[in-house]
Length: 282
Figure 1 (cartoon, rainbow, N blue to C red):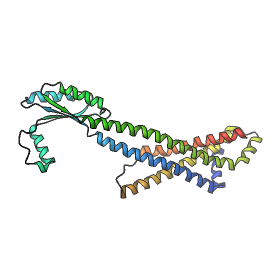
Figure 2: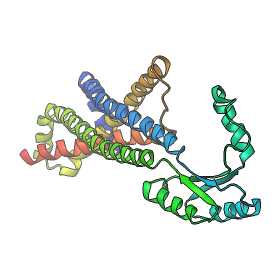
Figure 3: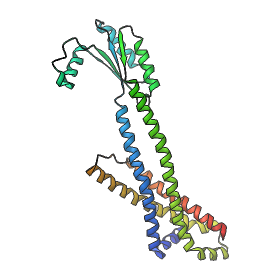
Figure 4: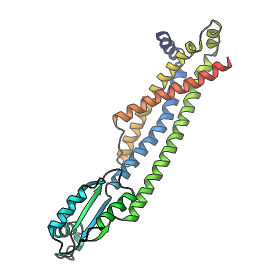
């Protein structure tokens, strides 16, 4: 392994221009993948923020005893789908309406707005079926006049989330495949540049594993360096976008490290495929 690592380093020294070209090519292919990942991350966060606004509002009939509504709030809080539930009294509803709709402040009189029970669902439980099911259970209380949750809006949001997820997976797989092909082709150039060396090693009895090892290590090193460079380029693009266009959420540290490791893995796979094809022809 030490000899293989030394040979991989010598490959960088023997062909610095080709090595730099390989790393740059890998970096830009991963940079495109990184930009897509950044867009997908921010789109997911945006949809999550919109989903956080999904709530069910059950309006309480006038004259309902406070004990009945308080008991209902306690019961609803035990639903497994519920993240939070709160009772909004008539006075609180009036105060909020006057605060949020100041242009209509004079229109709202005491008693014009009913009390309500406001329910928010847990993440992952905000699909239309779950929201409708919780709304039906709330409607079963005798003192509930009406239940509203913006059914059409919830369905459209859920449909958009599914489309974004499906498109993200498809495009992500495509970008990963393109990156793998580019990396494999780049490393294949290095393999072809040392084809004579490989033939000589074969003639003196070197095994396929012994021949492959330096190229695999070289691929991992190039993939890692390309991944780091791609991460830097992605960060610069995010900073420029955040400064001149819109605020951008950056990757978590774990996700950033995972991206560099993905570059190393793609370098390893690209090297394995390129060397394997060449050895079969020798």
